[in-house]
Length: 51
Figure (cartoon, rainbow, N blue to C red):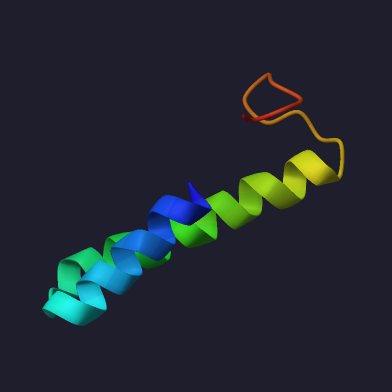
Protein backbone atom coordinates (compact mmCIF):
# COMPACT_ATOMS: atom_id res chain seq x y z
CA UNK A 1 0.00 0.00 0.00
CA UNK A 2 2.89 2.32 0.75
CA UNK A 3 4.51 1.58 -2.61
CA UNK A 4 1.22 2.20 -4.45
CA UNK A 5 0.85 5.49 -2.58
CA UNK A 6 4.35 6.59 -3.55
CA UNK A 7 3.66 5.70 -7.19
CA UNK A 8 0.45 7.76 -7.10
CA UNK A 9 2.34 10.67 -5.53
CA UNK A 10 5.00 10.62 -8.23
CA UNK A 11 2.55 10.29 -11.11
CA UNK A 12 0.29 12.97 -9.62
CA UNK A 13 3.25 15.33 -9.24
CA UNK A 14 4.57 14.74 -12.76
CA UNK A 15 1.20 14.89 -14.53
CA UNK A 16 -0.21 17.62 -12.29
CA UNK A 17 -3.33 15.85 -11.06
CA UNK A 18 -4.14 17.03 -7.53
CA UNK A 19 -6.66 14.26 -6.87
CA UNK A 20 -4.02 11.61 -7.61
CA UNK A 21 -1.64 13.42 -5.25
CA UNK A 22 -4.32 13.31 -2.51
CA UNK A 23 -5.00 9.59 -3.04
CA UNK A 24 -1.25 8.93 -2.84
CA UNK A 25 -0.95 10.76 0.47
CA UNK A 26 -3.90 8.83 1.92
CA UNK A 27 -2.47 5.47 0.79
CA UNK A 28 0.96 6.25 2.26
CA UNK A 29 -0.53 7.31 5.61
CA UNK A 30 -2.87 4.30 5.89
CA UNK A 31 -0.10 1.92 4.83
CA UNK A 32 2.29 3.38 7.39
CA UNK A 33 -0.32 3.08 10.17
CA UNK A 34 -1.01 -0.58 9.30
CA UNK A 35 2.71 -1.29 9.11
CA UNK A 36 3.37 0.29 12.52
CA UNK A 37 0.46 -1.53 14.15
CA UNK A 38 1.59 -4.83 12.65
CA UNK A 39 5.18 -4.26 13.79
CA UNK A 40 3.93 -3.62 17.33
CA UNK A 41 2.16 -6.98 17.34
CA UNK A 42 -1.39 -5.64 17.32
CA UNK A 43 -3.97 -7.54 15.31
CA UNK A 44 -5.44 -5.28 12.65
CA UNK A 45 -8.92 -6.30 11.40
CA UNK A 46 -8.44 -9.74 12.91
CA UNK A 47 -5.07 -10.39 11.26
CA UNK A 48 -1.67 -10.31 12.88
CA UNK A 49 0.25 -10.05 9.60
CA UNK A 50 -0.55 -8.01 6.50
CA UNK A 51 1.05 -9.18 3.29
